[in-house]
Amino acid sequence: MKAMFVITFLEKVLRLIYICIEENAFFERSRITLGTILGTSSNNVGVLDNIIGEHHHRWTRYYFLHEDRDVGLNYRNRLAHSIDISVGEITLPVFMKIVWLTLSTINSIFVNLINNG
Picture 1 (cartoon, rainbow, N blue to C red):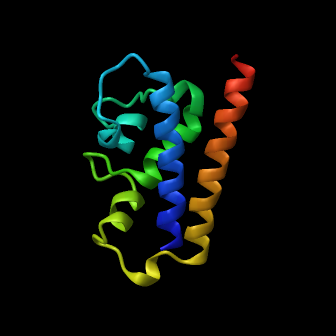
Picture 2: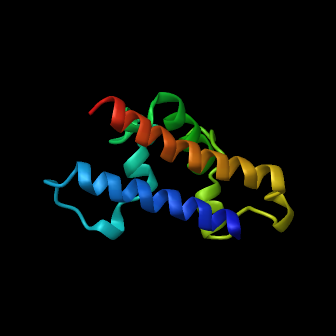
């Protein structure tokens, strides 16, 4: 379950940044999903695409979301809702990928914000 906490942390950080970027939009904060933030298969450009960077955007969507064409590992929903996942599936290497993706995505956000003003 540590993996779920890491994914939730990244989702919260991305949601807070999304709210700051979309400050003039009308929405209920609790209804902002990872799909809204990162985009979906029908809208593959998320609001944070320029801030996260193209590669991290794709990796984050692949690991944490599930596309219409059965592409993606969907760890966020599978862990949050205990759907189609076994206890032994989140091994140490998988957990380390999740931690790496979370930290490197946050790092990319900082680097891109500093470099792009």
